[in-house]
Image (tube, rainbow, N blue to C red; front, side, top):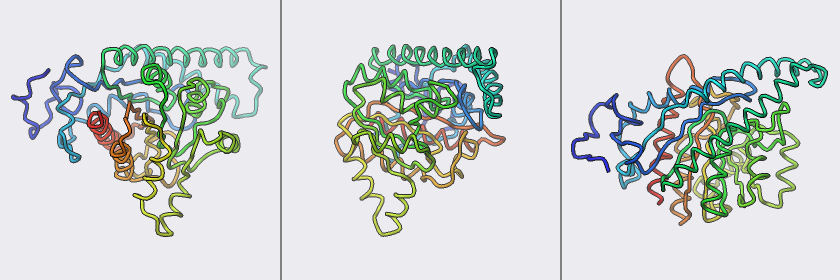
Length: 346
């Protein structure tokens, strides 16, 4: 374990140290952050494949103070380097995807164009490769007894990690913070689209017994039908419903208690940054008006821990990169809260 006797948590973040300026190695750290530089299937704004590097840089400005107590950071947080091979593969396939999306947006039939058929095949194969890579990386860490947080990248990235967690923990549930349902069977014919992550998780992971979504405010008829016919495997708290109930006098505490009651004993957090108000994430890929303050989400996650449930992992995805550091600044603080809440729950 790292010797913290020489570490001053009140000093300027040491650029030679790891995430949040903390002096831990991967071996010493209890929680390891896996960055996944991937955004092949994004359908509107791009840049989230570079988010992890920007969040890492911004994290050195985060004050090392855990206001929820227990000094969770002393258990060790460490972020791995971005895998440049994955980033290069993402960049290559993203260019293919941009040409493909432009082609189909004009109403052209994919099957009539051999080049587009080839692009679609390569993109779907590349996404399957990414899923396997994430699975292997996260399983390796879990087998070593590490807690793992995944930092995207777009929202397609955590599927392999969720599969690895299911093998370790058995039955579990997901709390999804998101402006979108992500329940499409596919989107733009991409099987592993960012818009299909929860459909794929529910389809491919039988031990995922419950998905509770909060903050959703943009969805299609296919997703509505999926929720309605899920036999309560999926429970969605739409942003409009939450706001109307609060306008009529219900407190966020009452709503969070109700949300937590739907979750099973073991809970995974999937945090799409666009679940927040856009003022906090102006460059996220598919922004939608409305959304949460970050304090509302940290309160909700704290309530999960206080209920006696076990947090087993998290992802933080869809952070954009803009002309200023605001997105990565907010992302770094969201990551700080998630890391502390996870280790303090154990």
